[in-house]
Image 1 (cartoon, rainbow over the protein chains, first blue to last red):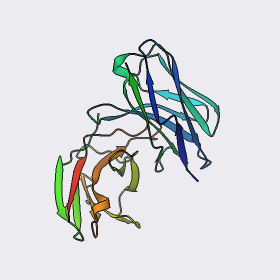
Image 2 (cartoon, helix red, strand yellow; image 1 turned 30 degrees about the horizontal axis):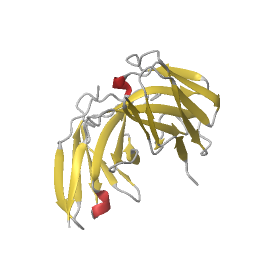
Image 3 (tube, helix red, strand yellow; image 1 turned 120 degrees about the horizontal axis):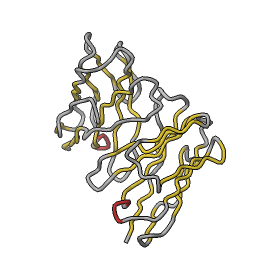
Image 4 (cartoon, chains in turn cyan, purple; image 1 turned 180 degrees about the vertical axis):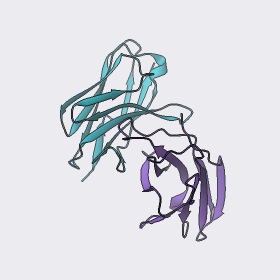
Length: 112
Length: 111
């Protein structure tokens, strides 16, 4: 069974559209994260979500919003997509904030 | 920004040990040292972490200097599947703000 899964794996869309990426973890973890990996392969934390507390990286535009319907899911909504949003987005989870993180396979977003 | 310094790349031969260094001279007393790796076209994968004492697990060993200003990830017998980018990361404070990845070390394994 996949521990951290993301859908879709690939997402191609036009500028200005609104899209969502879903993340689910079946590990029973309390904390989930979203990371962005740009074309230069730099990985940056976007959000962490622990027991309904959201911590946002200040560099993330407010067009990005995480939504957690329950502890096992943390979806990423993106409004008014821009060319610069093209990247690979990784979801991760951990049992507690100082433990190891388990990453999903990534979603490659391409904005045309 | 990352608070660690790693060589951009290293090369090793298959079935030989690999020592990947990391400097973290500004580490604070509550910072954990984490290592992750990312294989091509995959998400990052946890390798090992420690605080003060050396650590061993099935994947690797972590040797931490006595002053904690540097550490070394040891792969005891490298295989071609160990070719990846290895990241040394300090998990600051409670860690709730996630991992801060630097550029990492690109490990090349020669057959």
